[in-house]
Length: 320
Ligand code: ADP
Ligand code: F6P
Image (tube, rainbow, N blue to C red; front, side, top):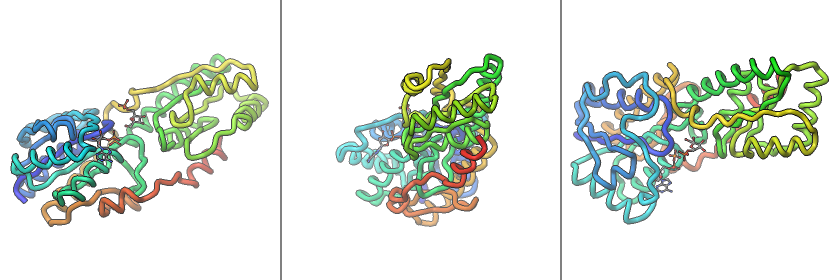
């Protein structure tokens, strides 16, 4: 292994830059590899947008959100032709190994490249969603939860002043972890997540109970995969006519200064990913189990079913 490439793909996540920095520096300084950065994920791989990186090229990025390599969604990579072109580009640049930082889709793409061409690659789970079954944690999740937590605090202040309820819609199409963890940490009254069936009557009953308890504000954290905040507001108002404000947090959640946890997790994953490439252990995804860095066969990783943490869900329900 002499020359590796690195890309970020799919939705970006805070901590991707810290991970890029760690891959580049560890690969150059410790593994004596040449490193190429691929711009815009699989799109850049197909187009041959690769640039040599050195230790200085990753200066001053450890604290920056987003990804200096940029990212993209690239439907072409999911076709036979796209995959073939990407493989040809890798060969043309003399690349011996590839590190992919991205979410479920990006790791699936990497899995295809490995399955079809046995091209040496390693995946690092980079997504704010925390929605990958094989790992307890995905890069960016902690920062995002803290961003949502800060929003809950601000919303709580003004809702309390006005004796109001508010629905806060957060990201998470199939996984409600952002809503659940931020809701628990922020003392939200209700968390609605796609993994659990929603019952509007129960939501309304909870709001009524909170009013009787004398609560001055009521915050419902809603994962986008359940419904939109305006739609939910309408559904509630049809059963109980009350004042409800809505906030859709949107992309604020995906940017921002990465937390210490995300920078450290990124560094740990980066080192394992480079080690795996140089040790000839390929087609694997790096992750976290019981606070230890693990690596799992990519097929197995992608088949692992993601389940909501029942304990967290139970505690959140009990304390609201
Ligand atoms: P994320 O990685 O954040 O889940 P996407 O689901 O959009 O984001 O996937 C990112 C990219 O990974 C896609 O645009 C596509 O290029 C690639 N990809 C996703 N699924 C597959 C697949 N089944 N086969 C090949 N490539 C895929
Ligand atoms: O990165 C994951 C995610 O943030 C989802 O939670 C969200 O639904 C989606 O990406 C939106 O991303 P985009 O608008 O960039 O496609």
